[in-house]
Length: 172
Ligand SMILES: [Fe+2]
Ligand SMILES: [Fe+2]
Image (cartoon, rainbow, N blue to C red; front, side, top):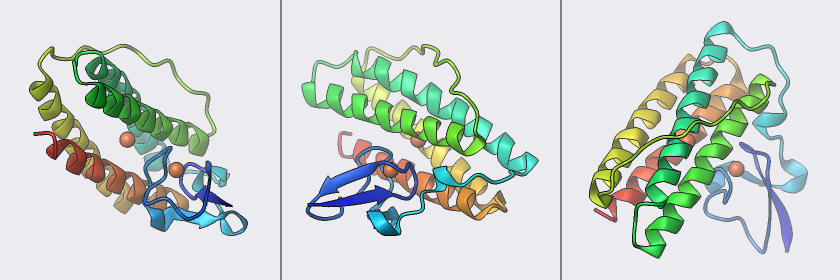
């Protein structure tokens, strides 16, 4: 077994080989390194531009909102699999929120509660809208970032939300 570290969230994965994506933040395997080589973006303590702080704040808000929405959706389904899938999505989005607070070096803000539909198909459709919105925004934020580690982080998050779209499409 080896210790692998995610370059995005900084969490360690213990296993025989690299996972295809980070089990915590969902970053693709290209962002996972053997422990000795890892320099996660959350460890970079650098002055951030005003625009980057604004974009990270917007990301933090969106990720906390997504976390609350997915927890609501997890509670609305009769399917054990879909309940578990939404609970994992909620955890992944919370991990994204934590990444933002670490890069900005600020405390975590309070997560609110959100409502959602009783209809599972409507919830899948809303999930697609949310993930598509986030993916588009993070692609833009990656282009706008002058800080290398922030650019890498938004690139990884854009891919994660894109992967979530593919996951949900399989249920529709
Ligand atoms: Fe990660
Ligand atoms: Fe996210």
